[in-house]
Amino acid sequence: MDAHHRSRGRESRQSVVRLSLLLLLWMLDASQASVLIRPMLISYEATPGTVSQIAVLLENRSPTATQQVATKIVELLQNESGKYYPQDPCSPDPNDGVDLSHRATCREWLSFSDGPDRIEIEAGTTVTLSLSIDTPAQAQGFYCAAAIIAVMPKIQDSVIATRIDYVIPILIEIKDRPGRRQIDLVDVGLRRQGTEPDALTTVQMVVHNNGRTYNRLQASARIRPFAEDHRHTPGDEIEVKELSIIPGSRLKLETKLPHHLTPGRYRVTGLLSIDGGPAFILEKEVRLTE
Image 1 (tube, rainbow, N blue to C red):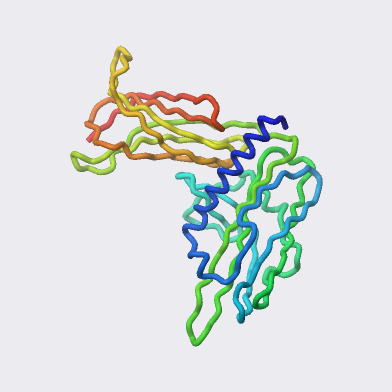
Image 2: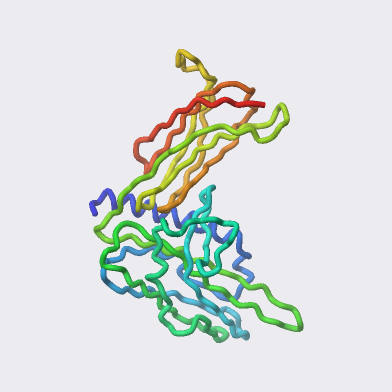
């Protein structure tokens, strides 16, 4: 892997550090828990055909209470808006409909090699878990999964404390074997945000990652009234979103325009930059109705 690819990989991993914080928004405030976990993101360059160990530290900050912790390795997925979330393949969400067969998953490579899935951490002590990564000899490109570390609830005076799940994204890039990149901007469009006459309009961009790479995306769009002679009429230019995409994801990026668009024909131009490179362009005529 050359210096350009390594630099791009570092930028992508830094982006994931920011995005991984989004994983915590749907969980309770970590300050409510007395267990501190380090690291909260694992980004690792693995050598094919080797077994590696990564230390995960669990610190019980309570001066008096023993904490029980459960561990599980699950899939790391990405919804249409780009947010990451864990999914247990043994307990799938029937409303999700995600096809895991096309995901670049490393879940089956991973295990906590410390015995039982549940452990107890004495008050004021730190326990080190060993995350084992058994990388197949044929591995190539980028893979991901997630570890869930759950601080189990306790019953005190008939009051049940809240269980807190920590989600640790696990991102693995195979050393010297970059994956095939195939990220496509497949559609652009407009959608009204209601039936009111002055309802705002949303610009949409659909992006598919059918390759085996993890990349940083920057999407923007231009919206102009349609002109038969392709004149550059005044219009709107708007940043749609900046985020990263994992293999197998299908994103539908949406951003509201700052003002109302009247019904009519528009020329929508989507621009998609990958890892800061030149933008791919997709242009489409769209009819906006009442």
